Image (cartoon, rainbow, N blue to C red; front, top):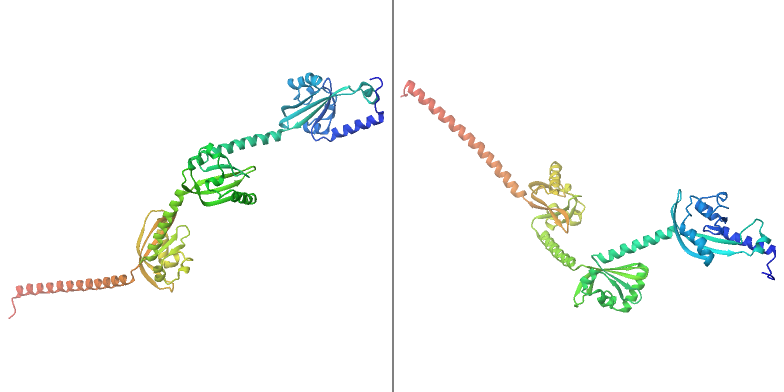
Length: 435
């Protein structure tokens, strides 16, 4: 060291103050140790993080700090054996638990610095070691948690991808090439996983060509998801399958969900045909027909005949309910029957008075029963005007009553005549026949 020139004391102290200021403002905990692992200094982040104070820290050996959580054999080995030889170590991970702080994970990095003896003698107010260890602590607890969650999330996504009933493809965002496929899409389109890796998205008909693919990517960058309700996708043998397709924007790829809707489409066609037949029969019926919502009791459909019977226009009927066409004295009975029908207990078949728009009454044979359309329950009611028939039945009933009364009168009269003749005979026998 003979002849080596050091900075003057003022400059050295300025540099030390500058270094201490940097250490003090570090957001991560930081210690300066001597070669015996005693604490020379600590920054505020160390005190705050580990909830200790200066008097319980400075001058104490690292292994005695806190609840002795740093008394870790491997850490001590690194500081006492590796540092003197290699002068540093990086990324040593420590997991510890402190009361009030909980479980944490720290990454430790250490460096050894040597201060020339002459310089120590000239600038040190207190006696300090010429060999120091700088020990930095980085809390990676949250990072670890996020990494574990990411791994778990990726694992869940992988399992969901592999086991999804929908066909799934992962597609390169710029090239349109297929990067991955699940079993469902392989079975649906007939390609193996290796064959899919040599294909692109327009090869199965999801897009027309590469230009169309790029236009779709531009759109998906804005909207995040593109949905095609019904698009033909092409199988390996060249046939088309009706599919519902979702394209979802991921970070580096596009996810393409392909759902086979061929059976659903066929069912919809059958249902549509069935509904059309139902509507034709419903509208052309010579009986008045009403379709009502079981829950609200509101009319949903009505045919021309019932409108004619009741005197309402079709659009007026849509604002009406069961109670609007039944006179008050019959309404309680009708609603009771309606509730029983809704539960599937009975089918209504009765002759009931029905109220027209003008308030007049006519009589109808009413038949009503629950019906299921497209998976939902309704009540279907038919009305046949029996007003004339009822009048004839009432007239006939009255005539029958008159005949019954007349017959009774005739019988009574005949009985009285027989009784009179009997009395006459008794008198003749007693007194003899009058000459």
